Length: 369
Image (cartoon, rainbow, N blue to C red; front, side, top):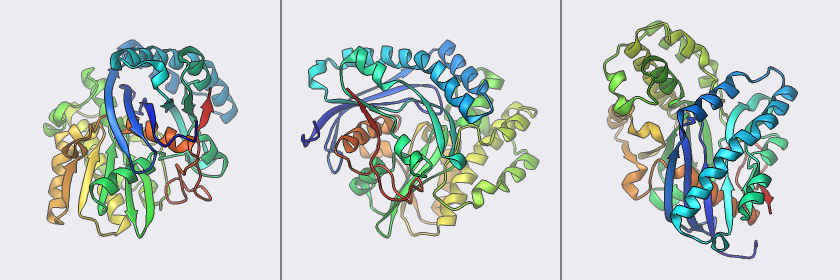
């Protein structure tokens, strides 16, 4: 299989926002060519989402117990992914024999970069047994075993996009957690900058029983809770040098405090926290760039977009959406896992010292067939 130059592959992503499953059917060589054929997003129903949140909430305290606990809950997630993959294959009208690979990121329920372990719920073997298409998953495992943080794992696809769009740009993905990728002096750099949508989404659901702050409407009506915001700005994470990565719930102590405030004030403050972490992290880099390209669900939040635009406009830096260049900003990460699957099958690097902190550039992913 690894002798092929170009593969037809389905990339699948279930992000830290836990809102649904993204599927992209692409054709790629895992290097300089990537053609998006068909894509679709499936929203999780509320019952499934609540069960996921409960699984995360009830995580045991020790590493060994967490690993056992994750294994026990794997079938629940795998079955949902399987159901939606079958729907997608039917939707794209492609025969299974014409699909070379499935690249899959499981559902992240815990990420501990300090102890070099991360838990994603999925069973690549079970998916292969039921679909009969080779599956590549567990992209983080090798990186973690070699001392890396296992995240962010998508930088090589972002590198492809940067080379295609603008070599002096930074790609900012605002998902549950925000991360950035850039090329600087021939180095690929990527790291998590802070919370993206996670705290905002959790507050919106807590106060309004809605999944997200549509267009930043609630944030726009709020005011700053200065005490919490100022405490957040002093968090040690923002002083750490890259490579660095985050668990979705790393900043939960601020979420707990914000829940005790007025609805829109809490959401305003959380949204400004997201903006602060982005600006702070980019400024610490102290590099020359001329464009910030946004991907992920947070790019649709007009409050965040306006705050970023206002700041970077003064520095004469262009703010763009990846959609402006013909890509669906909601599906970049599913495209990414298709692209990474092909890099894996060809034994090409998917992480390096300046993205995850691994000792040297390595490939990754486990093939189930």
